[in-house]
Amino acid sequence: MKYAIRAKNITKTFPGVKALTDVSLDIVSGETHSIVGENGAGKSTLMKVLGGVHIADSGELIVHGETTRFKHPVDSQKSGISVIYQEFNLMNALSVSENIYANRLPLRAGFVDKKRLLNDTRALLDKLDLPLDPEIEVGKLSVAEKQMTEIAKAVSLDASVIIMDEPTAALNDAEVVRLFDIIKNLKEQGKTILYISHRMKEIFDVSDRVSVLRDGKLVGTAPLSELDEDAIVKMMVGRDVKAFYRKPGNSIGENILKVKNLSREPYFRNISFDVKAGEIFGLGGLMGCGREEICSALYGLETVDSGLVSIKGQTINLKSAASAMDAGIAYVTEDRKESGIFPLMGVCDNLTMNTLTEISWFGGSYLPPGEEKSIFNTYSDLMKIRSSNPNQIVRDLSGGNQQKAVLGRALARSCKVLVLLEPTRGIDVGTKGEIYELLDQLTNKGLSIILVSSDLPELISLSHRVAVIRDGSVAGILSGEEIEETRIMKIATGAEVCA
Image (cartoon, rainbow, N blue to C red; front, side, top):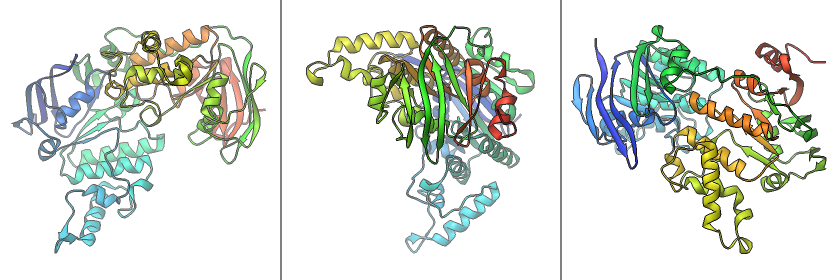
């Protein structure tokens, strides 16, 4: 059997954390090999060792039969490995062709040979069957098109091994299908794919073999044909996992939030619903239907044209996020990396950011350290945030712990209504379970929750009621046994019209 990569006893330690312990992994040439595990299991660290970003403390790397030691990403690239990280490494002001061949631009008489650059790019894009304009600025591309550009750049480096880290995190269903076609094309050209994803369906759609990491150790590797979802989940979390999806059981109370005829053209119009104490009220619908814009308006991030919003019968003016917080509305964004965390600040600072005006003294000129520590202890424990200390930089936490920090900050300032956009996107099954348990605790205490989730089983199992949004309007509100996948999709697509 021919191996693209053989990693033997790879160990990597960071201050206070052993990220990888004696990990040995064989990657067969020409296969799609998925690496799965909970947040913090060591997946990203292993990929960065293979990509030359981190240097292993000990162990051996054999790439295409040659023992090597990467000290820099360039060393990894020279060995035929290219990594496509979740956060793109592209220059928005430059064209697709300039991004693909950055640092390797063809020259003629000391100047960039633009004709050759465009011809080379077109030939590469045709080979990969990628529908991109080589002359367009990358900043004007969609997320999916940027993903394609990264793939083309990886192949242009003559990479034989392409590592994809959560490549579908920001893609819609159609774009995911397109990505899978590209992966199939790459495999037909003899490329080896290492694929990291938290989405179980994708693992079964693309994988030849699967390796599971847990707590920095390799639990096992097996052909996909020998695995099912329950087996993979059990390997990931180290225990039998009961179904996380379950119908909410707590009783709901009086109306807390009332939305009446809320409009903001062209995104949504005449939106009306109410949310009760202890209720999870889901917003369902297809991408672009207006769900996210409705939530942004409820948090004062978007100015509405008309309509009323009231909490416990008191009309509120949502002119800003500060006014929404003052009224008792909290908000968790769908994009924790771009607009959720403060990446270069500590965990404690991230958790207390929304409470500074409440805990500061003398008009905000003095911040009592004891108050901050108390909030950190309370919400770090509540959210089960795994950090080495209160000042650990949030950017260095796993994705699941970053999400917990964003959610903890929203809760740290007392609220009556919590707006959640995609609260479990990009996190592992174990952390999802912890968040589901937390939502149960919060609703049992009477908190009202508005939930937007593209994961239909999640939306269905967590919600007491679901408002289906179609083309910016409420197409129907379902409850109880009415909340099921086929019904939601029929209403969302217009195949069924609710009375």
